[in-house]
Length: 273
Length: 309
Image 1: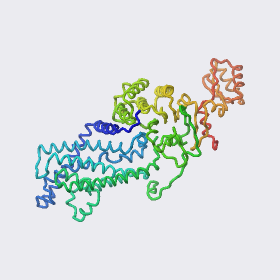
Image 2: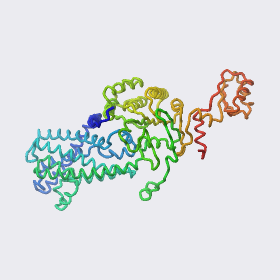
Image 3: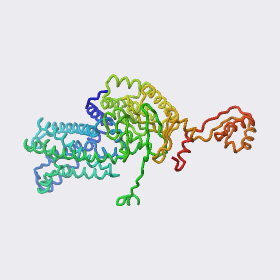
Image 4: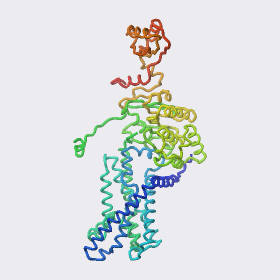
C-alpha cells in the first residue's frame, strides 16, 4: 500500500455517484421533464395573467418571453445548486451511516462534496439539454444572448455557487449533531435562498431598498448571479466583482461549516450499529 | 403529550455507557465482547475504532489514539457492522471495491488477487457485478466482508457479523473468519449475541454488564470459574424405566427433566459422577452424554447476578 497522498478516489466517488443517479433512469427523466414542464406551465399562466391585467408588454425589464425563459432556467439552476437535496448529512448523522465515512482514511467533507458536485453536474447536463432544445426552436437574442464564452462563464459560476451552497447547507445539516430534528431548518433555508435569491420572483421586482440590502447577503449570488451570467447581461467588471464576492461567501460558509463539524463530532454517538 | 412537552422542557439522563473499564488485547489475538443490549459493547467498538470520543480515559490501538483518526491508523483497521452496509446499495459490489482500491491506495495486482481469493473462498464470484440490493442477506454479508478486508487490516472490529443470517450462511461466515485469521493473523474484536460465533471463534471473552467488565478471560476458565453444574443427557431403553427414573431420581443429585424416554439432568459439578452412577445402575440406557453447562447459560447467569464484579 502506498503511503503517498492520492486523490484518485475523488474521481471514483464522482463517477460512482453519477452511476448511482442513473440506476433509476426512467424515474430520473420522468421527474426531470415533469418538473420542468409543470413549473413552466404554472409560470406561463401566472405571468400571462399579470401582463394582461397590467396592460403592459414590459414589466421591470421583462417581456413575457423573457419571463418564460427566466422561469425555464431558474428552477434548473436551483436544482443544480441543491445537489443532493434535503438530508444529505443530517440523515447520516441520525441513522449512524456517517460511521463508514469516519472510518475511511479520507476527508469526509471532500467525499460529500464530490457526491454533491456529481449530482450538480448531472443537473447541469440537463440544463444544457433544455438550453439546446430552446436554442433550436425558440432562440431570440432579445431574450438572452447565447455565446460559448457566456456558457463557459456560466459553468464556472454554477460550480462556484454549488460549492458555496454545499457549505451553507451543511451548516444547517450539521446542527443534527445537537438537535433531534433539523428538517425544518433545511426547508427554511431552501425557501429563503430561493425567495431571496430570485427563484420565485426576479429580484428586479423587489423594492429598491430591499435589493440594496440583499446585496449584502449571500442569496443573490446563489441564483440571480448565475442567471444573469447565463443571460449575458453582466459586464466583465460586474462579473468579476460578483465572482469575487461569491468566492468570499464560499470561504465564510466553509469556515463556519468546518468549525461546526469539528465541535459536532464530539456530540456524535454513531447510533445504529 | 410527551413530545409536545419536550419542545420546551426536555429532560436529559446522564448515563455512563462504559465505566471503570480497562482492557488489553495482544496483537493477533481474537476476543469476543459479550453483554446484553446496552451493556456497552458497541460503545467500546466505536471508541476503539475512533467513531466516538470517550469523555475521559486513555485508548491506544497500535500506538494510535483512535480519536485522532490518523489516516495511517484508519488504513490499518476495519469495522464490519452486521447491521450497516458500506457498499453502495444501487451499484454492484465491484464498483464499491474499486472505490476502496483508491481510498486505501491498494496496488492493482494486490487488489485483484485479494478479490479473487476472497470471492472464491466466500463463493460470491458471480455476485460481484450484481447490484448489492439484489443480493440475498447472506450474499450481502459476504460481499461486505470482502469490502472490509480488501486493504488487509491489522485490526478488525466485527460487530454482529452473522446477525439475521440463516444457519448455513452463519457457518460459512464463521469458517471464513477462522480461515482468514489463520492466514493473515489480524487482531479481531468480535461482538455477537450468537454463542456459536463466540464459542467457535474466541478463545478469550470479555463480558460487560452496565458498562463494566464482569469477566475477562478464557472460555475454558469461564466454565471452571462459573459453571457450578454439568448436564447429563441420556436415552432410556423403556418407557417404564423413564417413568421410574423421573419419579425416584434423588433431588440432591440434581434436577431431572425429560420426555419420550429422553432425560436431561442438571447436576451440581461435584455430584456429576454420583448422578451418572445412579443413572447407570438404576436404568437401562441406550445413549449417554455428560456435557459442560452451555456457555450461553453460564453467561446468562453471570449477567443476571446483580452487583457482581
